[in-house]
Length: 112
Image (cartoon, rainbow, N blue to C red; front, side, top):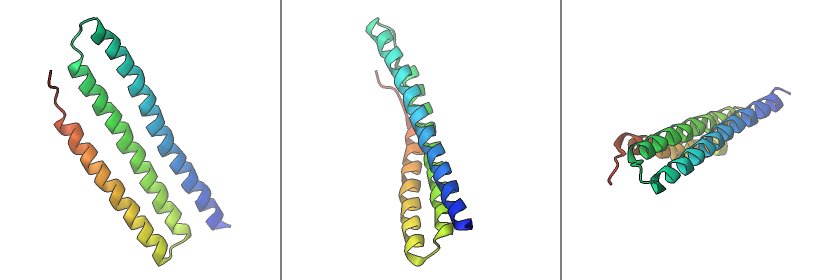
């Protein structure tokens, strides 16, 4: 019975992670389109584009952290060696993605 609730909890946390990423994607897309319209009118949008990238990256990182948390909670319900190895691989991949996204966000520069 307890294991079933952990599965629901894991699914809920995963859903939150996906919603965070989707929300950030929609916001970034809307702002990007607005900026490109301004760009067509001759406005320099480069600094604002960098800000959109920064905000979008933050949403992706936050979503990835929720997804990692969901994987950890899910592994509690099935703590076998295979599940732990799978969790370790998933966390490693997502951590590497997070590190590179973080680095990209810190080093973004606009060349126009």
